Length: 287
Ligand SMILES: Nc1ncnc2c1ncn2[C@@H]1O[C@H](COP(=O)(O)OP(=O)(O)OP(=O)(O)O)[C@@H](O)[C@H]1O
Ligand SMILES: [Mg+2]
Image 1 (cartoon, helix red, strand yellow):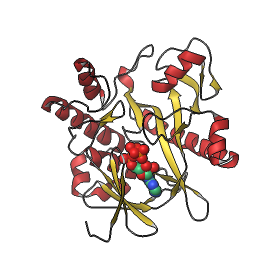
Image 2: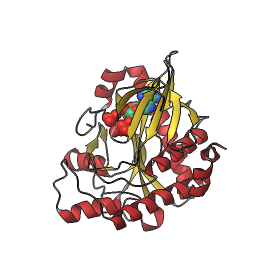
Image 3: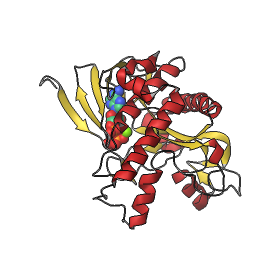
Image 4: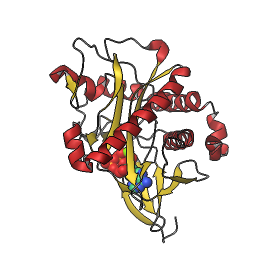
């Protein structure tokens, strides 16, 4: 990397560089986190899967909302993108009751202020997809918030706009996934604002790291669903009785290989593109 490129920071998964005043370089590493802890072992090519899938979905959803993607680099893990002022909320849409949504429902019958019918079971499909934003915690876990808290952070008009757009994006991608035998249970989107004050879809989009994808043929409500990708890692970590705080455990080879295969499978099923073709020429996902 040339020394004119400034390193802005490291997320759990991505390295952020400033290319100039208007452009960023986002480089997705092969780091994997589980229970919000980054593990010491990497999953080869995971960053390429996330980068390729995001670029694919940016291309597919371009008619609904503009996005930050400017160029995809040859390494398949780096994207040049517009440098934005990011909104301080994570835009989550849930079509099914899982994760923190399920926990909140059990405790209160509500998720982010949406009162839900009584008697729903874990992983059940909701009557309608709901917008359930969260704060972006600098450290620790994100916290689910309701409309009032979200509007206090971004303004009411902006809140309504991201809610509408997030729901539209979820509907569009979940319909496509359903046609491929994959349930998009929920997803997290991040938006930024450009110089003109317009919303731009940013970060990663509709990847296994930002979404719960479930194979439709194995779906059974009434309990947790096996995750498409991180299940091997989660199961292995659970089997150790690890307390889910740093440092996380090293992963054995078979867990690494199994996890890599699942990430690649998610890429291929969702895009219909062979992962080797992506490695040879990343721009195939933009066609
Ligand atoms: N176009 C953009 N302009 C500015 N910032 C962006 C843009 N796209 C993504 N980001 C930010 O880049 C970071 C991506 O890093 P990464 O995904 O590794 O972070 P994370 O672990 O999810 O969360 P955290 O940022 O809390 O570490 C996020 O903070 C995201 O908000
Ligand atoms: Mg992220």
